[in-house]
Length: 234
Ligand SMILES: NC(=O)c1ccc[n+]([C@@H]2O[C@H](COP(=O)([O-])OP(=O)(O)OC[C@H]3O[C@@H](n4cnc5c(N)ncnc54)[C@H](OP(=O)(O)O)[C@@H]3O)[C@@H](O)[C@H]2O)c1
Image (cartoon, rainbow, N blue to C red; front, side, top):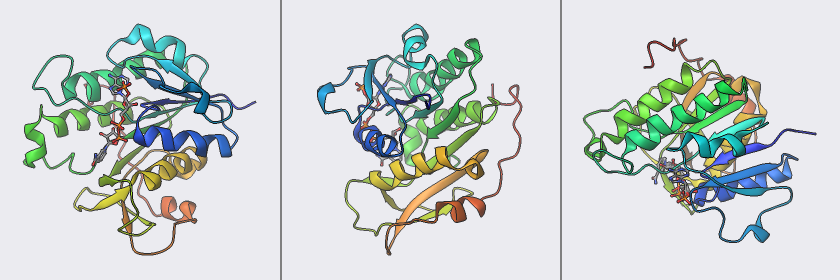
């Protein structure tokens, strides 16, 4: 039987779209959030809800035990410092998850949901607790982890398909645009499915056109990330 996919942030808007997709692809899922799940009876199939906080490594041990894959889609705080800062969630939180996995000698597939703009430090978004800097540090920790990872950097999230359903994958973090949570959820599941997505970081947008089905083709066009040592990511 497939080992479960742990969706950290699985009780949120993007996370809840991932669970039925994982169910349809035959993967059991564990939805993790600080507040647990409001309505566990509505979780699809073999999905279960778990209460944990990425800022508290001990709370992560049980939900991560025996997992085959992790999707990290936690919403950061925006405080300048302290527990509600991007540093605490986007950097230390990511590191806590990686440390718990390393301590268990586990090497699951890892998909990190980040965002566009992370390399553009002068953007006004960075005024919120240095959100962009800490996201980048979290990305680097994942890239240096030695795990088979994919970093997905969505554009601005929407719950409608106004910009179209086709996806456009870019690299280099130069663009800006919208993407639906549905498309991001699909990108995460497809990244878990295709080994070609391993070791890749890409931005994700929607554009006019029907929903994308040829994900393998899109992944195959991506350049692999430069290899990052653990020391460089500290
Ligand atoms: N909004 C945008 O335009 C945009 C653009 C690019 C990328 N993103 C990113 O896309 C991802 C999904 O966004 P969304 O709007 O769908 O998120 P969301 O609905 O706010 O869900 C966030 C999830 O994270 C969980 N969470 C928050 N803090 C946590 C913690 N310390 N430990 C464990 N779980 C925690 C929440 O559950 P609890 O509250 O119960 O803990 C919830 O399940 C986020 O990473 C977001 O930053 C957003």
